[in-house]
Amino acid sequence: MKIEIEAKIRVESLEPVAELLKAQGATLESVQHHLDSYFVDAERTLTRTDRGLRLRRQTIDGNATVILTYKGAREKTKFKSRQEVEVQVEDHAAMADILEAIGFTKRLEFEKKRQLWDLADCEICLDQLPLIGSFIEVEGPSENAIENVLDMLGLSGSDHISCGYSRLMRDAVVEHGLDKREIMFTDTL
Image (tube, rainbow, N blue to C red; front, side, top):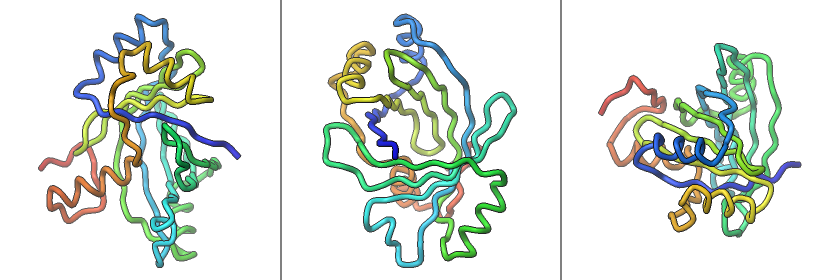
């Protein structure tokens, strides 16, 4: 089982970070579009225990893949750290139907644009989401590797966000008084 270790930081703009990544010799691996669907069980056991179930349609250069991800509860560490188990599935709609047939409900769905960079043994995600804005995620093999990359990008003193995008999006939906569960880039306030 994989343990995901990451730092998430909200930023005003992604362009300066992309320029810093280039200057540091980072490699842009891909530009992606995600459609993330989050599922809950009837008793909300996953949510109450800080776990999650996500179905993602990920498109890179016109090629789509579908990934089902289980995220375990966050561990008490400096950066967000949690168990992550992923499996690629063939059909997004069929997998959503299976989840609903066994008692899960799609609670939230939203788009995300991502640039995936590699630098110093870490993956750096430059993420843009509707309603909530721009974020940087640095995921690495250790807290030291992540700290090193944050230093390289001048972000070591920045506040880290410990919750996931699904929580940030749910909070924004409530804050804006929206009565919807699907948030897309075409939506306006």
